[in-house]
Length: 214
Image 1 (spheres, rainbow, N blue to C red):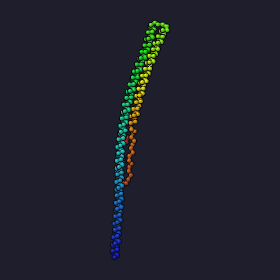
Image 2: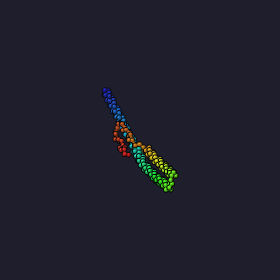
Image 3: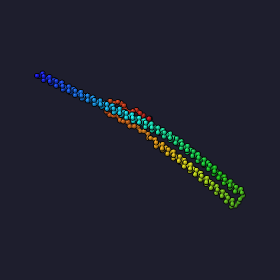
Image 4: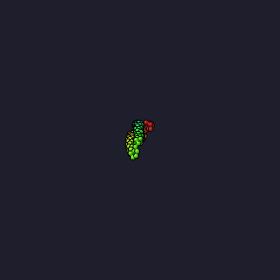
């Protein structure tokens, strides 16, 4: 009877020890599975962050290249626009100089004609009041001719000046239009932050890229 009781106690103790061991194994398994899940989640977060940063970098490269292309196109447009405006100014100035040269010759012609007319009056041998009236009449004609010539020259100068001002305003408008189409310099992008987690660090870091020289 005593032996049977002792045997029962031993069996019960062994059974309890086995249950405790199994329980500890179960807990360890749960801990291991939790660590694996945390590690997996951390790896996935790192990979997702890396994919996002790669996409950000590629977009930045495209934006920088587009901005640089627009800037280069604007520089060429500025250059050719400036060349065109300068050529127009030179052409207009040459035309104005031609008008002034013709006006100078015309003025000399008026003076020569007036001198010839006065000389003719004197050569006719007229005297007294009549010669004075004739000379005065020639001077009046000379004055009218000079006034008309000067008015013609002033009108031509004003027209040419207006044309040159119009060319200048068109050049300024062209510059403003070109400038308005050039996008602003591309700013350095903001990358996705490094995820925080428990597990293996994959060491992906951030994409290597020289932001200033796309």
